[in-house]
Image (cartoon, rainbow, N blue to C red; front, side, top):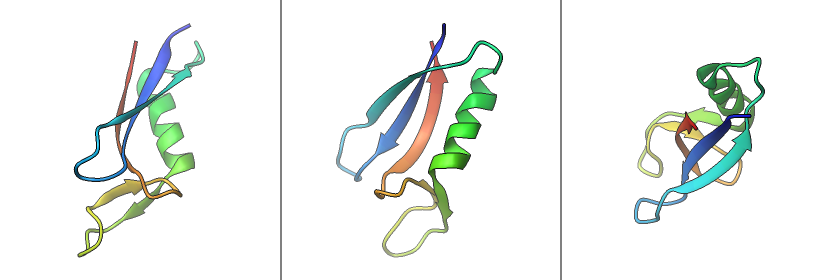
Length: 68
């Protein structure tokens, strides 16, 4: 089974966090990554406090994903 790696950023000076999840065989990497992003994050417009992007409930920026 292929795994998907999700990249999250907690702050501008923090290192990227990596979360690995097994990807189902019947879904493409893009399909599964977008599904995870849509279910676990909320989009925020840029402001003085945050960059524009998708954020988790605990305030981490969803940077992207890749599959291995």
